[in-house]
Each structure stands twice: as structure tokens, then as C-alpha cells.
Image (cartoon, rainbow, N blue to C red; front, top):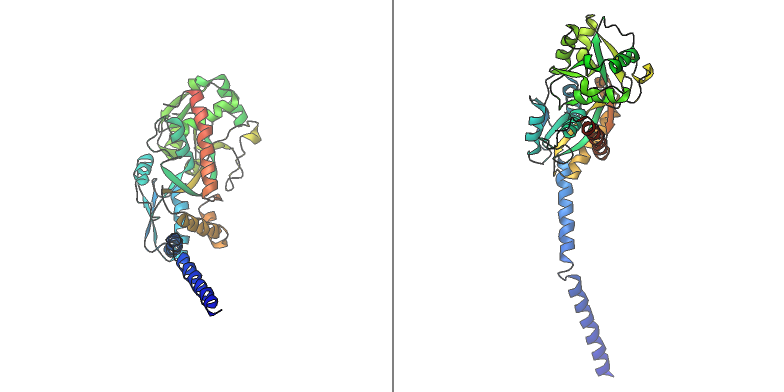
Length: 344
């Protein structure tokens, strides 16, 4: 009996030893390591940012992109207790290409117009920077319509009359743009496509930005310039130019200017938006922190007031929705560019 009892105790002891060994086997070790690593990553991401963030704006100071970027930079600098410094650079596409090579650590961010990004992809078979692959959109801050600027004493009573004239006289339509690969070409092509005019008979004249375009309109050097409304307002206020339409929707701060559709010209789609981008490879937790911070800003009446002061039409989208928004623009404008021979 004692021998049997001793044997039972020995077996029990052996089972306990084997069980303990299984609990510390090599197959369990990686799980413990992964758990520690995940916890460490969460801790590191929670600490972001630990130093200054550079927010690159590849446009001049005072424009729509610059002002929106400065508004969110000011808010998040206070929210995160770290400086976010806006850096203006010239050469939008070249700057975006350089930005795409930046360290993906969350400390270099770029504000860039969605329309310019989408049109660059649409009009170039081999884009300098592919905005659907080379960089990561993380948020949309604003979205605004484009304005059609004509001379103050232009003979057309409204946009429908103007559009009908273009259908009959496409070879007399001159419009301003910096190049045939930029947004202005897509703007005019989008309009001609909507009204059934022959875009290929129209003529581009060199114009660098809305202010230069408005000056050429006022001087009678071009028929129309299309772009951000604020860029035209100094000459509109001076009585040299007038805005004949907004498209594709109403501008909150210029409600007196009717939309193209309200004037009987539906079908145009082009608008513009200020979006934030990061280099590919940034940790998702950092992107999530930006989205959480921007969402909080847009819910804050003080931030909303700051956006109103700069006449920015706030229209926030998170990273996932912004990516889908930009890809849809790229797809739509690429189809139009291919149809009209703009894609080179």
C-alpha cells in the first residue's frame, strides 16, 4: 500500500514539473515579448510630440492653404504644448517631392491643395510626385468652390449667357493658367465638358496665380480666370473685375455670388481643399493623434471663430476619408484629362 501511495505521489510531482515547464516553453516567450513591445510602442506614441513639428506650406504666405495651416498649427501647438512651425516654400510640386523623402516620424507635415495634387496626377502619365502612392493624406481641413472672374464690364448678364457664348465661340475664349498640367486647365476642361463646348479650340495665356490672372482679366488680356475667390477680391472690390459664378457649390463668405448650377449650368465638379499629408510609413498612432486633435479643434468654438476670420470653409475629414476623397478626384480628373488630350 505504501509503495502504491509513493508511486501516486511521484506521478503527481512529475505532472506538476511538466506543467511548469510547458508554461515557460519557447512558444510562449514571443507572446510575452510582443506584449511588452506593444506596450512600449503605445507609450512612445502617447508621448508624441516631444519636440518641434515642421508644417511645410509650399505656397506663399497669406493664401488659403497658408492661413488654414497656421490656424490648425496654432491650435495644436497649444493642445500638445509643442511648437508647430509653418514653413513657406516655393515650388509646390518640387517641395512635395522633397517632402516625400522626409523621415516618417511625424515631425514633418505638409499642407497641400487637393485640387493641385489630383490635377498633377491626372495630367501627367509620370507625375513628379504621385499623390496616390508617394505620400499619405492624413486630414482635410477646408473645402471651397472655385470662382469665375471676368472683367467688370463683360457683356454677359450671367453665367448661362457666358457659357452659351463659349459654346458658340470657343476659339475666342482665352483663360489664364501657369501651365497646361495644372488645375486651371482641368477647371476650363471641366466647364467645357459640362456645357458641350470644344475645349481644344480655347486658348491658354500664361498667368501665375489668381492675382495675376485677375490683373490680366481687368486689362482685357484674357476672357476669364478661374481660381480661389479670395485671390480676386482686391480687383473685384476696386470695380475692375466681377465674379460671375461659383462652382460647384456656394461659398459661405460670398453668398451674393450664385453658383453655376443656380444659373442653369449644372455638371461641373471641380473644387479645392486644403489637406494635410505625411511621408509614407508614419505610425498609425501618430496619424490618429492628429485626427483626434483636429476633430477636437473643429468642435471648439474658439477655433471655429479663428477659421471664420480668415474666411476658411472648414470641412474636416479624417485620414481614411481624405484618402478616398483624393483618390476619387484623381480618378475623375484623369478620365477627363485622357478624354481631352491633357494627359502627357
